[in-house]
Image 1 (cartoon, rainbow, N blue to C red):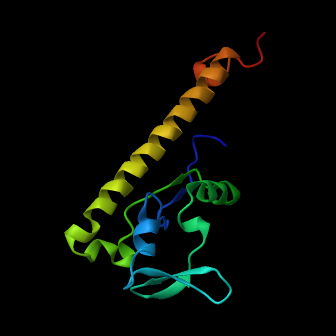
Image 2 (image 1 turned 60 degrees about the vertical axis):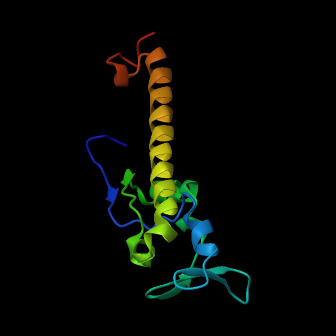
Image 3 (image 1 turned 120 degrees about the vertical axis):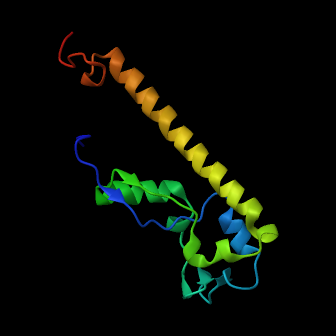
Length: 135
């Protein structure tokens, strides 16, 4: 995919980085509830909805992005659940952990990009200004 054209998901729902554990430990909204069929629902401030790995497993999110032709996804702390309205002493640790998790994901992405770029440079890729067809 050309780097001249970006497709960005500006409204992603992501509850990784320890938020799943925080929500699972709660008994008031927002919390997780197991359904009769064994699946999970998140009971949020605006109702209940299925809580699938797409919400907390970044590898599932990356696969969805690829399938939809997305190049980027904006991830922010999920305020829609109302978690950010909880008392600071109850949620501060989760906010810090989420932020650190996002930073680590960014670092992993950067390392992977640098590694691919170095490998491409060894073979004269245009990424490095070389001709990939030269011997």
